[in-house]
Image (cartoon, rainbow, N blue to C red; front, top):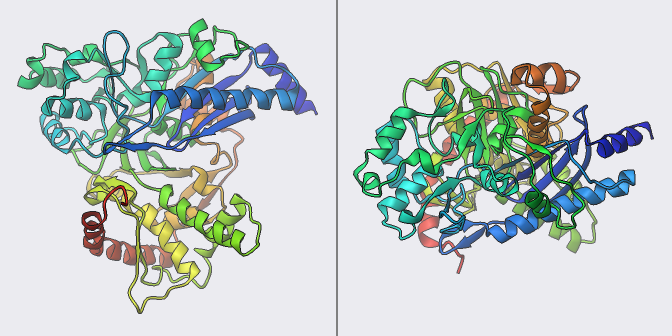
Length: 538
């Protein structure tokens, strides 16, 4: 009862921090107290749409989903503590990174939101990578904009502002066209010294003939990048009504710079110092390593980004992770239901995941092959995806091997960029932390990820909190800016957090290597499926 009383007092006094993250399948809101304990939460499920070949979310669903997640959080506050959520001390918004949201001078969206999942900007990506000598992945905002210029799209001359999903929501709630530097680094290259957009690359982009003919200066179209702890505005009356249409929430809360899910993942795993890293696993999966120095050359497998504090980091980003895995788990759930067995979702995941490390599982998955590719995956050279499971007549087919290759397949693409950093560039990693829902089942994903990257994997007790909690922590950092972000995390947020570390098992490492060879050798099968099966399944 004391904890509930303390939480109620913190809520009434506004001694709280709110983090809301727009993930690929969930919009999740988390309210924390000054001890970084989650005291209330709410969420809203949503799915991207494939509209005329473009992966998108309508802006109407952005707002209806945000309002629903916030409403559920406010209801959770009322149900638990019997108080109304009328004021919040600090808050912040984060979202899936990058993509393309172009607005005209009146604030109208010119084309539907093009998400990170689209792989339609290869020509622009290659040209800009060569121009900047700096890898520009297909999902980066500047690649989308330049591709639209190259395509001669009608909306291009009317673009007055470009931003990300987190930047858009923040703009509407505060009136400020700003962006956390980590998210901004996925729009346009960032200078790690000045913490602004790279001046050389700005000039180079503006000098492109097709850009110069438009009479634009790219920096004028981009949000202002801000490091963690910077003043990013306050919740306006209009913003409070957008978030809470009931009128209960008061305006005036201070907002942190809006960040991308990579930045919140780094914060949630205390991985913002050089030589620390994390693996964030959700609908997509990315491995992040904070660099001691810039990479020697541009690599298409490694995305250059920034931490929320503005330090350089390398990211290996794979578009696909849990979508196919979840589909199989749900299929087994339907079988259980048909058999009259009632299992919760958590029990389903526990039973199936644990099968992957059952003694019946062969180290390499028994010769089975799986591709979890729902969408294009540049890391393995495909522009579209087709989920695919295959095996030869002589392979060892059982549940243990089936689930093992599901997880091995999901981890395979992200290892490409991680190996470029550690093998080709000599990047050193002192600690690699895993987080995301896949780690909610103890040991399994942690053990198999350790095999995939051949390095110890640490999972913290906060691992399942993920990005929204990390965003709430970044919001609370507004109150503690007298110390560097890394010290704030070490000495306040994570000082008492428990963790477990699993070292790679040599048998698992060898098994993953054998599976990976099969995965790479079988890519022609995946490409044949892409050619043979229409994307819409018709």
